[in-house]
Length: 571
Image (cartoon, rainbow, N blue to C red; front, side, top):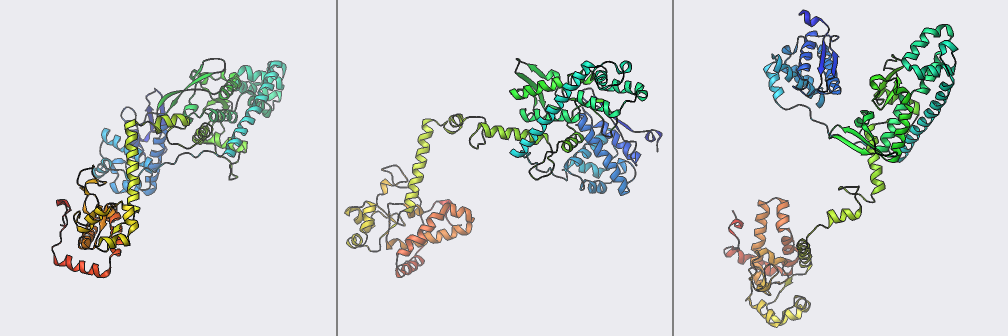
């Protein structure tokens, strides 16, 4: 192995904002693979790759370290040039979409800078990903009970912290330098207030051994005078509950993000990761909470150094309990959230400790705001009044459009009435017998003696029926011969069906059967369904079996003919 590979491997990500993020791979078992991955990581950094922020760099480092350890557990040796397509694909099958995507980015960057990957791997890199993106689920809002309990816990913790803070400030006003005047609670408060947490701890270490300083005593002074992670997290969570700002926007707030427009109003600027810079005029309760936080953290801010401009600062330690008395920002880490859940005791509706999630807090804020300002459900804009919704989205039609809509409605209603009407079926060609047997049908159809005579004589036959008024039908302008297709007569209120039409009705039924074989069921029902039902259920059963049998023989003896268009002819 080359000497440079045996040295500790360090990956330096030079990010667009000038920050250099440091990562190490020297503790991995396969140093040859670690060196290749380090080269790919550096090559995938902005502007040549997608690694542009510190959080993204951490994700890539975690994925590469895990990949190196997994390959070593599988017994794979050598670097990326020794990797086979089968091994890589087998490993991708154990990954999720995001891990596979990061590995592809690093391998592509390695191939572009160093080269040497197997041609099969290169083909896989140019192809589609194996794993699919899982459909995300929106954050579920907290219930009303959970929201009230969470708000009460934050409010109570803030109130208790403010009380002890004021008490320690009063004690610091009465105290003096403990190295000269002795170690008392007031003197320790004075020391912490003027020296800051780090310097005060070092001073106590110098003179505290001989003075018998109780460690719990100065820890209590520090926790009361300066906000700790639990107090800062309570302020931050309550601020998010009152503003609904995205979590990453709240976490990254600085003092220069606050613009005072008056004594009681604040314009807050923040950055939303998916859209960019945004601004919000804070509600009154959020302004009061922000003022209380700035007052509570003012003493710590004087000793914060480079973190002075950060909004959410607190005194704490790292994840291993080291660095007591250090000042940190961003109190919404995983460790801080778990600690706050344990100390607050807030329970969810299921009786378990309630996890505090920034996305759910934001979702609940908007859910509650929608319910307080909107009386119904809508997918347009819940912040509009019902009048605005109606004016802008529901009644924006022109007079011509309204007339067209009314015409469509009237036509549809007429079609429904026509379909519900009973068909006029004439079982005898004798006008007197027809009038005697069907007086109600004659009256409903509006036929006079001349019209009945024309229907019975066959002067106005339209292939499958006799039409009471061929020049005044519902399917064409008045004075124009009706252009409807033969089967449309089955639902026309002007049609009358006599025994002489039976043969053509049976031919039409055969035509429907052929169309049913050539079309899908959905297509056939959509086009011919209502006409088939009228023919089979209402018209043909009105004729006797002997008449139908005779018509069947007649249609079989003569050439079948239907007045169809070329595209409607049987194939």
